[in-house]
Length: 181
Image (cartoon, rainbow, N blue to C red):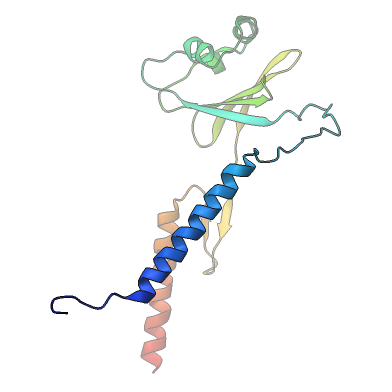
């Protein structure tokens, strides 16, 4: 027997048995040929209540060349509501908008409740839209923040300025601590 190698009998036996098992599994699957069972879905109760109206806000920043009537039209404010706003004596508070002003539209569901025009950080105009339309000029007060060093800073300071002040205070404390060692 020159040139012939020994046949791996264990491998041949394993392949033969695997093939027979696969053929039997396919035969059993084809012979049953039944579709998988279907689930039956039963509705036991109906939902009768509609979901509550959600309060939402949309914000618009006024750009150069924009006018209030176009902005209101873009936010689907009815002409009747616009007419009520423009017909008030103090409507100039609302119509005098400048680039950079923020207009906040507050809705309850799909119904417009109010419009707030932020002129700057302290001044804004509030338009309440209910049965009647009212315009109020609001002035916000600046709060004072008490720091650890007993100094008072207006809340209009930026975070960066407050962080710099805290960093400087920590540096002084560490210098004093190192000088004591």
